[in-house]
Amino acid sequence: MTPIRPVLEVEGLRVTYRQRRPRPWQRPRSVHAVDGVSFHIGSGETLGLVGESGCGKSSVGRAVLRLTEPSAGRVMLEGEDITSLPPWALRRRRGRMQIIFQDPSSALDPRMTVEELLSEPLLIAGWPRPRIHKRVREVLEIVSLLPEHLVRYPHEFSGGQKQRIGIARALALEPRLLVCDEPVSALDVSVQAQIVNLMREIQQKLGLSYLFIAHDLGVVRQISHRVAVMYLGQIVESGTRAQVYGAPLHPYTRALLAAAPRIRPPGEDAARSPPLRGELPDPANPPSGCRFRTRCPIAIPLCAEHAPETRDLGTGHLVACHRAEQAGPAMAAHPAALTAG
Image (cartoon, rainbow, N blue to C red):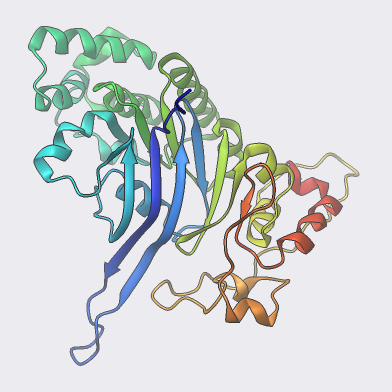
């Protein structure tokens, strides 16, 4: 039996930005925003990509869609390498991969009605008018909006409704993959839950695959099947939701879980893993060896000398840490962190 290929395969992805010269006599700097990232997403699966602001999460999402051109690596969409496609060929494949942006207010043209916003991608793709009319109403129903909303403008909607319009527009061309770039971070908590539930229902109904980019560990835990933790342009740990949340192996993952806000019942022990110390290093000049070592509570001299290799410590639980075996059991002493978010 032939194995089913993942919807998305990313291999050794790199994204480098060139900064302007600080002074005329100085060399321009290169920022390696994404440095050797690899992952895959199966059909109907959600991969949550988490990490601090500035770690390169959004650059990964934009590079997957080629909104930002990768510096190296491969992006395979349904078995086809799209990294080297010319613009005219890439345009034909845009319908198979779409994006939901973080801020729906800035993602929607205020001069266009909802019907115009939803029709635009279909017109660009060359759909006939009768089919466009039908498809617009189909996606509107999928996101639980009413036909009378078609004649309204974005400013007439709440934040949650605007994001529903953004989701409907992403669904218009019947994609196989959605890149969700912080899709609920700009919304109220109650509205966040509604949008997350809507996205789960859409996924179950249409069999979509999601790359869900977020910094909110609670939201990622609710929607993701697998989770990848990113630090300074690299994935340091990945596995199933139960593996990453229930038995985190990398010190950075444990620190993120410990930092997540949580309401504790009266009398519960407040002991938790030590919080992150220091600031995120300069991505243009990352530390030698392990990039997390300057903030790591268990770093040893080896961490400064050699970058850790990504290892599989069982059943697909991947981690890039020299001391993962010694550090992993420490989390069991802090059960409060396991339910963070």
